[in-house]
Length: 166
Length: 228
Image (cartoon, rainbow over all chains, first blue to last red; front, side, top):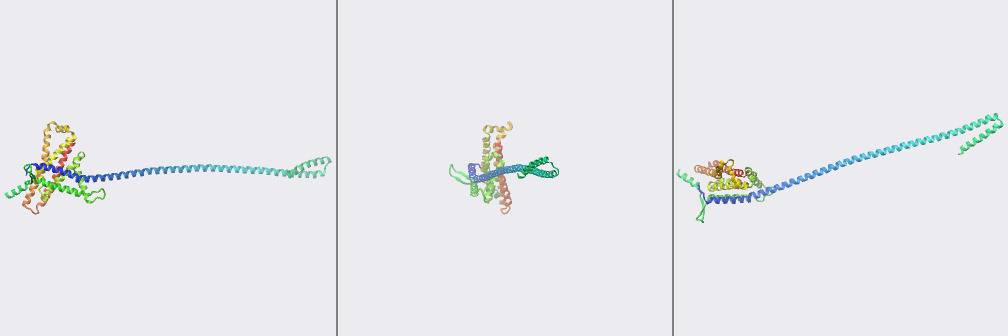
């Protein structure tokens, strides 16, 4: 029951052998497979993280381009508005100018017409005056004044006929 | 009564299994042979269980093996701490060995831990491991100086501890297993049918596993203390 002998040494040797064998056949393979799995998981996690980062970068990029596009759109609209306003003003000015021109032309025309009419009236009045005068003179005339008048009349009638012909 | 005593004594004897015929005959005890059996069982089980392990889509067998191994490693690793990671395989090996050795009585073998040679060997290995871990970690000067801490007066007690620790380790294990064995033999002699089952559950299985745990727990505690 209480014996201590060489079996102590045998047991120690046995235990050491068992330790080595267990390490080789139990802990070794199991820990290896666990480490491998950990590695795979780590790798996947890393990949997932990388993908996420990539997606985030893409998102930022898209957002930036979107903002840029928005700004461009706004700028284009503003430019178009400016150009349109300029065009509008130009057209308006042109129209005004034309209207003024037309009005001025019309005025000029009217003036000319008026002058024409006035001249015509004048001539006609002159004729009338001459005729009337002739009639009056015919009733009470002297030879001298007659001639004078006649001359005058000739001059004036010539003027009138000139005007009429031209 | 004499008959019972002699039967009991015979059961308690650590018989010599065979004798190696050199140096005037080296007697190989039964416990050593049973240890070989335990080693064979553990190694064969390990080889069978760890065949074609896979990273993905693991079988139930692999799941069980992985949980068991990581569980045992975490158990010992938790006791010894992060710094003593290198000792974990040894501690788990000893845990498995003592556990199997203690409950192998169920299969009709004499538990090797009933032989003082085995428990002394285990305790010797433990104390060598503890002190070498301390020396390796602190260097021999600091290790030697450690005996005078916390005050110089306790130095003799600290030195005595080198012998007391393995002695208590081996005697606790030996005494528990021997006591359980004696009680079980007595019960078997008195009433061989039915009655031994609940007692065997306690003395062979529960006590055996507890003693295995206690042995490893104390060893790892001492190692942790030594390397801190």
